[in-house]
Image (cartoon, rainbow, N blue to C red; front, top):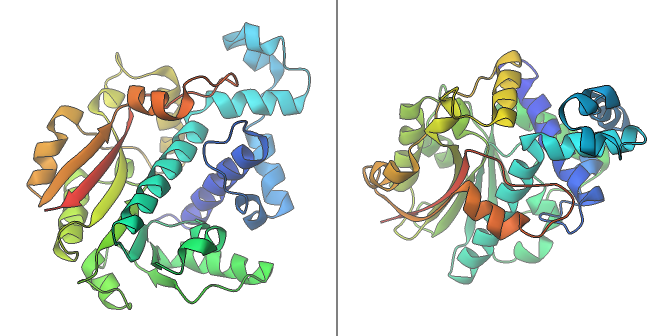
Length: 308
């Protein structure tokens, strides 16, 4: 991980979730604590970063530009246009909806891989009576988060367990073995916004490790890009822009999967694909009928896999 990159990405995702919580109607995912994790100057910096001049909007979307009367309007247009917002809020909603179902079925451990500035343990106290929550992330990113929590005066609940891990040096199984995680207990893992950046074999290694340290019936939710995102003639315009930005930041998107072959890929890791949502499925479930211009991110799919 590049120095400060993990912290930047964590702040960016918190900004996106916080912006939607404040301005989205109706809300797809309400993270009413996300903005509190951002300092005023950080929020202002993201506002500037995501606010294009109206002339830029006119050059690609003249109809919308006509209703952009100030910087707030330009920012709102940008947040709809970039894939980051719709991608982040819909995958978070999907994961937590699935978690609620899993808890009703007896899951008692929630493991968040690449947790960043996730606020679940502070935002959903009503669920902590039934769950132990384990946040895994790079030590630098986790130290940053814990420092920010301390600055806010938040008291981490007893059910929240921080597990620092550098996956280039340590396996998922080894990291969790250092914590109070119980490999015999039915568990739910979320792995969001990560697979795009990893080599294909590293993704399979993590999924195989997950299957090896959890009992049958345990769940992992992850999002992934389809292979067409990497084909210049087939990739959507805003996905091309997002991929270019990631390259500029030094974290290129490198891996996609064929949705039709995913069930077979997962079966080789000891997993059954319970659900595989396409962008059209995500659009129908979370964005259909909205009038604010948000729509599902092209090429992004949500997978729900279960240990056999």
